[in-house]
Picture (tube, rainbow, N blue to C red):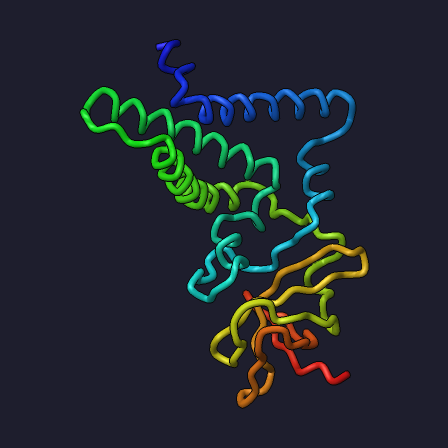
Length: 213
């Protein structure tokens, strides 16, 4: 068993699980000296996501995908532990099944790629119920509800009344945020690169108007 755990084909998965152990040790040491790794990672993160976890990822852009992965609902340290654990366990499981039940040999690239995709899927399905048990991640320097009047830039897609698009903005603390926006006017649309002004927060997106320089 030890030979299998330390085999070359499992090095990446061993590193992932060892990283989880290292993070746990660092968090334990941090608690002894009054410094929480959870809060530290959340505060130094340069990006904040203002998107509902159940938003359809077909909207386009990275924002819905990252929201689907619960990055906006879980503390960053908790998310890292969940993802690395899923990746390590998935990889070991795949290699064990392939080595003991099949004669086919998949390349390491395919094994790592498949493990990565499956771990993302596991992270989502474990992260959703876990996010309901943990306090909501409020790592933003300012509340997302205070974005009213700020200027955002459409990054991906075309924003229409019934079809939100991704936009980015920077707050007064120089922290970058990604939000979904739709025009406040039914007959208006915003194209990629266009600047808009956020005017009203809805459940999973912002209403915006055209920014006139």
